[in-house]
Figure (cartoon, rainbow, N blue to C red):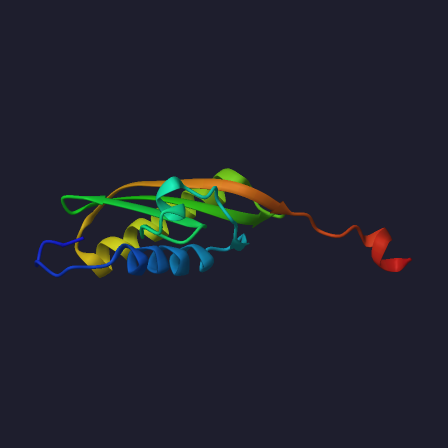
Length: 118
């Protein structure tokens, strides 16, 4: 993908930046595995299994698969991820991020206090 300055940025690099921004978000436990696409099976690049990136004429669309903690509201975490990823990518690439889809693929449940005592 080429940004406004003509600099080409690989989708794998964009995916890694999005992953780093996601993992910085409070309430995110880890990245989760998303579905394997036909393009990935055929060896085409476009992101990791937990981050899918599509670019078209300097516009970036991202889909993220995450595991979150049950100590936070899922919608709050998703909004923070969207804002953080968009801000980081636009700042680092100079390209417009039009869509950041967050898929909560898993929730980490806190252990009950009674289980710990036994």
